[in-house]
Image (cartoon, rainbow, N blue to C red; front, side, top):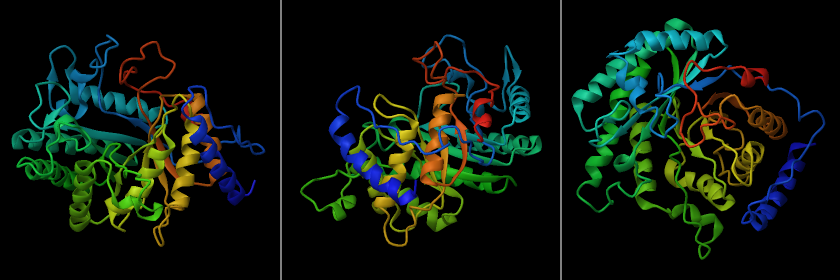
Length: 384
C-alpha cells in the first residue's frame, strides 16, 4: 500500500477511534499489507534500560529501590560485594546476548528520603559522587564494547514539573527548583561528552507536555496554551538553556508518553511548537506500551500520523528518526506490532531499548519484574 494512502486511511481511523475509545473493548482495526505482518526490520542493535543491578524478589513496586545502579556504583554491598563488579559482569553477559546499546539514567528528587535509587539533586556532594559514578559506568560500558548510550533524567515528585508537588510558578521556590534541575544536567552532561562513547540525553523521561486543546481557540493556535503551565514553562526553560549551552544535536529533548487518549496524543505533538520554539531535537524518543484500547502497532501508527499532520513548515517531523526508549521486555506481540508499524509508515527507528517489565509475568504490580542480566532474544529475532 502506498504510504500516502495509508495516511488517509489512518486519518479515518483517528476519527473512528474518537468515537470508540470510551468503550473498553474498542480497538483500532488492523491494517495489513502483504508480508508486513511477519517481515523483520533491520535497525541498529538495541538493548535494555539498565537502572538497577538487582531486586529483592518480593514482587513489590519498591522491590528495585535498594539496587540503584548509578547511586551505588561505587559501593561495596554487604551481602553481594562490589556493585561495580556485579554490574560489569551483568553488562558483559548482556553484550554477549547481542545488546549494543543501553539506556542509563538518574532518578532524582529535592531532598528525598534515604534509599538506594533516588539522589538528592539539592546536595552538591551527592551530585558530585553521581558524576564520578557515571564516569566509571561509561568507562566500563565503552570497554565492554557497547556502541551508544541513551542517558535519561527521571525527575521525581517535587522536582518533576508534571507533578502537583512541584512549586507553583509564582512561588519563591519555583526558580530555585528549576535551577536545581538544570544544575544536575550541567553536571552530568560534560561527563557524557567526555566519555568517548556515542550518547544522547533524554532531558525528562515522558516529559513532553500537552496543550489544553481548548475548542474555543482555532486549531492552528491551540499549541500556545499549556494544559499545565508549570510543566510546559519548565521544560521550555530547560530546553532554552540546553540549546544555548550545548546545541540540540546530542539530545532527544523530552521523551514522549504515547497516550491511550487520541486527543492527548495529538495535543502533545502539537504543543512541541511551544516547548521547542522552532529548534527541535534531531531524534525523538517514545515510550510505547499497549493499553486497553490500542496496542503498540496502533500507538506507533497514530503517533506517526500526528507528526505528519501537525508538522510545521521546515520542522521535518514527518522525517525525524525515532528511538523507542521503552517497551515491554522480550515481548513478541509488541515486537510484531512495532515491526508492522515501522514497515507500513516508513518511519526511521534508530534502535529500541526494552524496559525490564514482562507483560506476561506473574508479578504485574511492580514497575520492574525482571532482574538483570537481561535477555535479548525476542527483539533481536525481529530485527532490533
